Amino acid sequence: DLDDLLGRAHRAGWQCTVHAVGDRGIEQTLDAMARAQMAHPRENLRHRIEHCGITPPDLQVRVIAQGIVPAMQPAFFWEFGDGYIRNYGRHRADVMFPVKSLIEAGVRVVGSSDAPVTDYRPLFGIEQAQTRATMSGDVCGPEEAVDLDAALRMHTINGAYASFEEDSKGSLEPGKLADLVVHSADLRLVPPTELRDLPIAMTWVEGELVYEAS
Image 1: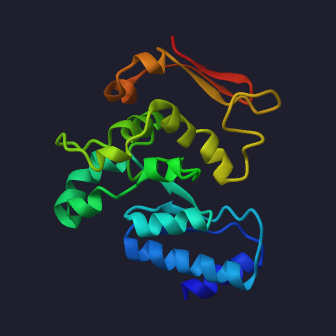
Image 2 (image 1 turned 180 degrees about the vertical axis):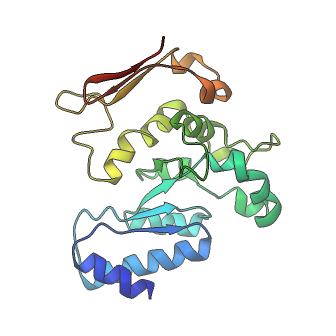
């Protein structure tokens, strides 16, 4: 059924995205996308996997080779990480959202919140991409944590890329929409664990000031 549905969407020229968390679901999705591309080759697909959760090295190789754009939620570690370790086992929890490995391989990993399932604040996801910390203080796959610059790109320009909007959104450049926030402090001087509560000083949408802290 998945092969048929995704194959028809691919053939019609759509950008396809499938929600998959477990390794079996990710494998099935990669199979379906590969079969669709083999039957009807296209360029610049940017097919996506939303979540792309349990992604051990063998599936990482396929994500890279097939040019998949994974939209991941590092913030899940805070709310669900202890359950991942308890129910999936640490060996699976540690390969959930393998952001650093994929970025280092050239993959445009996207950071998202999946709100209202979890906290909607981008800074919360940016924090968690750097810490991968659970509520109990444990850490899932610390070697997959990224630095601030990578976490920011995940939640800005990479998100725009995932929806073919990188020419108008995702970075501050002439000709783009000027969607931006001004924070109350330099993010590089704020400890990662305090980012989630950092106040917003101003918000701009398409170059117009829509919010200013009193």
